[in-house]
Length: 321
Image (cartoon, helix red, strand yellow):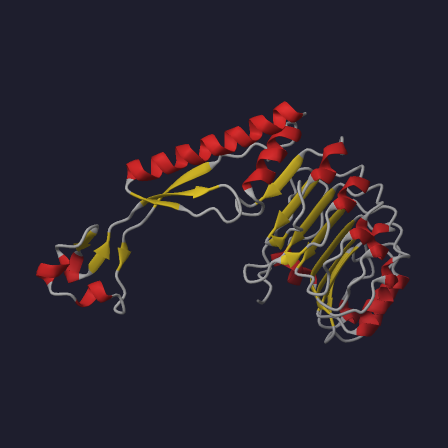
């Protein structure tokens, strides 16, 4: 899946200052010889001419490497003044070249598929914000553990691929962590999955999709992290469907009208087009939980049943504290 270039960074708290993804090309020049001496932000690709001049831009503070070559990646070791770095669509075998970047505060790795060891990131002394997106060879994130400065962490896969996470225990060793976002990821089969968050006094925000974890884990989070935004979740979220035109391959589309009118929840609309009536439905919290769909009364009953089940789990965890 090709990168979307959307800006997935939460800028509300001021931790992230790096140029929004869609604006990266405003900082690009095909010939780096044309870049002003006082440039502070730059986007660099493997096709840019005179790219080594980047090493003389002493005021440069932000760099995006888009589809860089190996030499450009290794040159990062000579840019200790950078405070913000984005690496997109690259296949480095190591991140060791980042270890000398003592001033780096913001780091984005997106579609970086060659590296497996993240331990150099855990040793960056000033790192505050880290966005990891679609790291195909990574499943062990323990290398991030021990960072004393990391405040904002995102681990995200893609719509067509869940990022595997072998163990989330390393989170317990991030004392400055304020915000955690996990999206499109494959969680370890442990319980509670996010138990490592319980001792993080600075944690304020947790972002998870409704189907990211089993229902029991969501209940544990609500019971044990009541002070964290995102820990309290609705057990069911009703939605309004839209009438759907029947595709030609649907057998109902070819039925004689007399037979068609005998079917439930269908009608003929403008210009004779056939539709299926929108059903009332609702999203249910928890991995593997099916969407409640059908008549309004049926859906409401299913949602209430799910709410009661969820509340019983939460109450059980509260009683065990």
